[in-house]
Length: 249
Image (cartoon, rainbow, N blue to C red):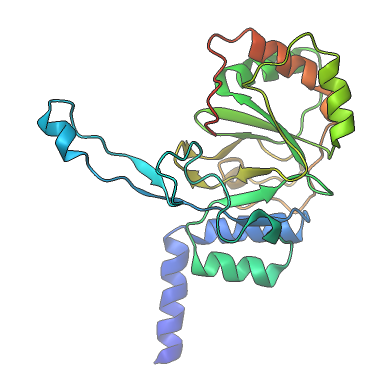
């Protein structure tokens, strides 16, 4: 009887779609050797009844599960465990997402792991179009409703400093995720909305489901150098109205 109940729990777990996060986290950690950890996640925000009485309407939505009521990246950052806990160990990853099946997948960038450059979604779309016109080969691109992030091969601060020093001006909306940084990966759900692949990791065996945030392929993703894309990203961010200076992933 206990065995039957255990099988039923597994079936319910799979039907609920929560195993997609565990599967993606395990694949990133074990197949790609990308250190990951669970993000803090989101929780429903309470209704503002007083505002409704004043004619301002009820405010509903999602809030970060961290203690900061004004968190600018709700759900999209590590909290407990901290960023230093990121690992490629399958047992640890499995334990984390078994206990927190809805937790976002957070990649610890830098070191031997990918780095990234992120910019507002409108600027990101312009930058990708420009890079495509010039025939620049791109790696994976992570998208949220507010920001796009281009994954690149690891870089250090000295290399990045030289690249930025050569620019006349670098918009504040352009952000760099290097050593000690982090990035949320698909198929996570954060305060800004669903995290998806705008450009999925290149692989001949890439499945359609992973392009929509499902299980990934087994081939390690190819990554470009940051020097090949930074000019286009700066130009796209500079020419975009507003620039999206808010840190909203």
